Length: 88
Image 1 (tube, helix red, strand yellow):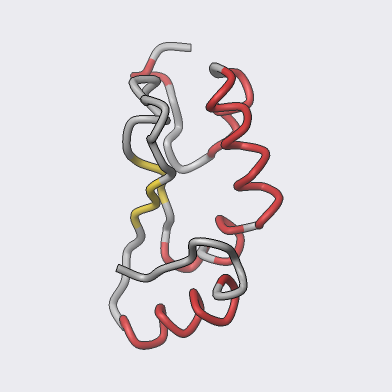
Image 2 (tube, rainbow, N blue to C red):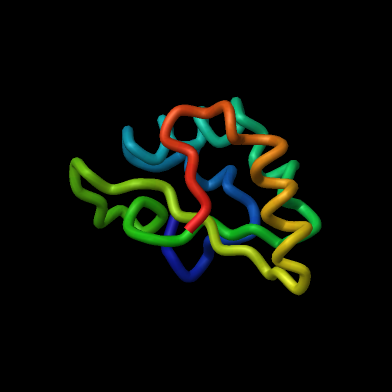
């Protein structure tokens, strides 16, 4: 699949990608983060989606947020028990 043909709002393209992308898809689906964040129009960004990742690359998600207090509450309520969780 060519980059120009990817629907960046649907992470299913990761299933057909390289090993890192496939593992990323499995993790993202398992923790259900895109469903949790659906009201914020989440999009996976960074090096992994475009296959230029390195060993230390992580998963970056950008969201459209108007009320940051509520958004932070959603994140903390859903993910604070996860290892390495942090709100930056």
